[in-house]
Length: 313
Image (cartoon, rainbow, N blue to C red; front, side, top):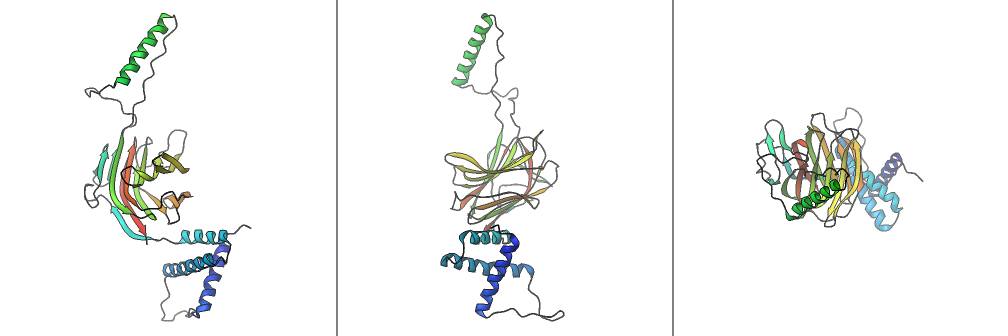
């Protein structure tokens, strides 16, 4: 039987009311104009969620309710609860650098703080080698070029037209900036950013250790005939695997947008842009805390105005 949100809320309210009845603690109704200050909506909601969680935990332990129903209740609580209250990392780059408070380390490419805007990274996709910049040629590349020349000569001698030599695609420049931070397994990352190009891609990642294992959130700008995309990936020693992807209008209006990425203790992750949720999924591959945050850019032009990470209690 399909359970609607209204049904779950009604059931939750009944459970909470029953719990209050058992303890004999009923709230006192105060008429309009009375001097008793009403409880704030946020405090009331927090108290209700706390009581409801205790009831769900007890029901699950006693096997007093359907397990699917209890999970639905937990999902409902997760949507109304924000357990991320502990500040882990915060940087708005107003100090003009990224060397301290917190200290970021430039691993490759180029990041700089643009006054009045924020942290900027502009990387060229498939950047061509400029004149005057000698590049070392490996033995493999030399062998391939000689083989190509020989095959081309044979094709011409045979009377046919030689196929044009296929040039290897230029490798795009990747800019990487990292910082060490003790990020709990349940976290909330918020970033204000703007995109100034429809090329390449930009990513945030929470990582474990120096190998880069963890979760990565890719933003791929809107290109001709395509929508912009958000990709959530799991990165392990075996490689990267896409967990969830979603298309949306994109950020290429040169305005500041708010990106929110949250993860709860049970592995539920959501990604939203300007308050609208685009990605909702669950993955429990990583159960330990993360040790760092990484920003990476391949061929995009992005300005990060601020980035904040909160941890759950």
